Length: 155
Figure 1 (cartoon, rainbow, N blue to C red):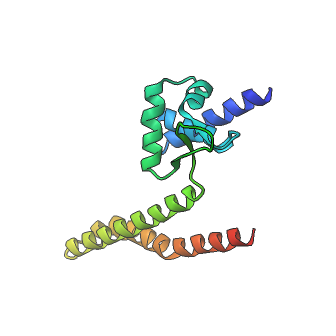
Figure 2 (figure 1 turned 180 degrees about the vertical axis):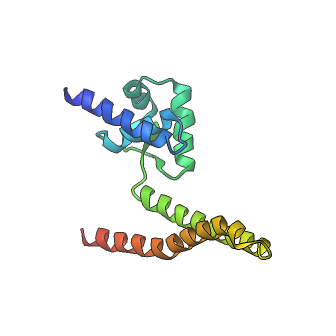
Figure 3 (figure 1 turned 90 degrees about the vertical axis):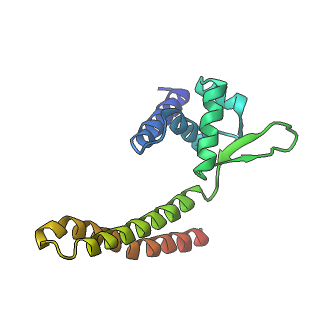
């Protein structure tokens, strides 16, 4: 298998993995390519050509990835057209967003437990187990992210 075939296979694997998380397949392909392309900044035309995609599909999915804070639009010296690249801090931002979602959902589960306070222990058990899991991650996740940032500063 040549390098181009391995790259296409990687892009498809990224796309399928992200599709399982709810992202459109083309958004996953875009992200997969932007993770490995050289140069890291790609124009819409380059994305269309490399991914054999329509202009509309590239436009729609780059906007989606920008809204998700995974991709950013950048200016490239000497070019009058916009280029796109993976945000340098994209994955940290996604993890921070996940931490916020965890905290929000844990608070909702606490409200549910108050609502169910007069219910039997058996009825409350599913809610308690879920709340306990989210409370655990809410407590541990910030330390993981902090350790990651410390590690990155040392590199």
